[in-house]
Image 1 (cartoon, rainbow, N blue to C red):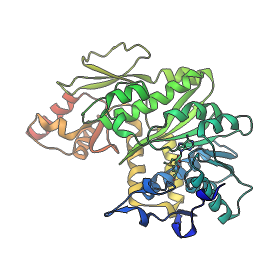
Image 2: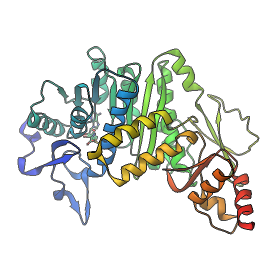
Image 3: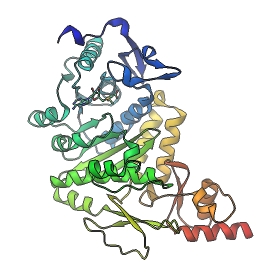
Image 4: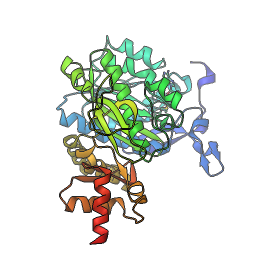
Length: 401
Ligand SMILES: C[S@@+](CC[C@H](N)C(=O)[O-])C[C@H]1O[C@@H](n2cnc3c(N)ncnc32)[C@H](O)[C@@H]1O
């Protein structure tokens, strides 16, 4: 390593996240006005992603217990300072090895410094390589069962290698920060990157975006006759995060195809539906409208897995924050209806000339025996099994009685 890649000690600070201490760049030096700009630091560390890292620890521990996995070998091929990888090692049980990598030599320097800090050289393997090249090489050496892909922007270019490397039954965790693209702000870019038509300026673009992301990962898996199943898919502020179970049997691939399809959206009425139909969109719904996708039409959150997540979270008291509690509870609530795309209270009530909050709409529908839930995607959002027209009639009746 040349001296150019050494970061002087005075430019680093020791932070603690969860149970883990690590050196990271002193972000005070990269403050623009009141805002810290992590991307300006020589090595990337974003304190705003602490919740993402903490939740990943909890989800991975839940994965280990729920699927009864003896030992975990974790690969983090875009590791930055290595703080995420170290947290896997220290905060998830039975982690035998963590393989961390970053293409940037300064990141490699900080990762190494963090490994030396803890004296854990025998449990960590460090690389300074291209993520995809490394993942393809590792296939010969390790039965990796957890891979965390946490890039800047789109994760798509890393997924072929990640899907090749990961073991059958493994946990693939993926971040995408190009939410604007997935939500339809740059439709051509979305078509190029994800091979799908996004929806522009709709009240529910957030969910369509994450369905396009999961759908694109699923289609890469299908290229190899593999399948994926989302355990959790969520949105927070500036990023999407998906936790997928990867299956390498033909049956997994077949099940994956059954969860791909399109969104039909009638802008006039606001009605929308997800239809299972891949690769050719054949609508069986009576609904007419525009087609978006292809995308994932199945559940985004698995209820039984969320039970395991809640159990782990209740034990990991040090990891508690109001924001994470709200996210976990919201995902748990919406899991059973996470194959029904959400409506918002504002679009529902606009034509009625009266207001009702999403929580009140959910309570009203439930009181009539109609399944409904709120959603973490939007505080004005709700999921239900019935049509928008029916919801509007129910609200009208409630106001007139
Ligand atoms: C968002 S940061 C990772 C943050 C880290 N996972 C965390 O939780 O703190 C993305 C990292 O990917 C690295 N990177 C970008 N392209 C890469 C490539 N092709 N192969 C390996 N690393 C790459 C960057 O240098 C950067 O450190």
